[in-house]
Length: 61
Image 1 (cartoon, rainbow, N blue to C red):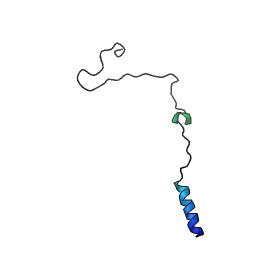
Image 2 (tube, rainbow, N blue to C red):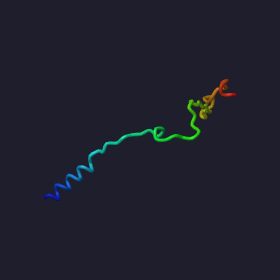
Image 3 (tube, helix red, strand yellow):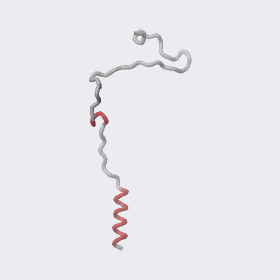
Image 4 (cartoon, helix red, strand yellow):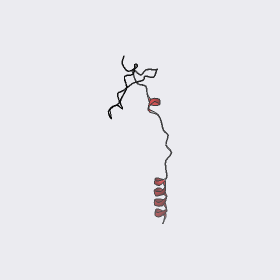
């Protein structure tokens, strides 16, 4: 009977959720060459005819 109770308690402990702590990757380390300022990138949209990027001035540098 004691073994049954111990087994039952161990089984219940295994089913209980364990507390977890989340960490962001950028908080864990530093990357060489990472810039302090934010960069903005522009891409080309490919899809239906006439629905892609227009000839905008900031895209043609």
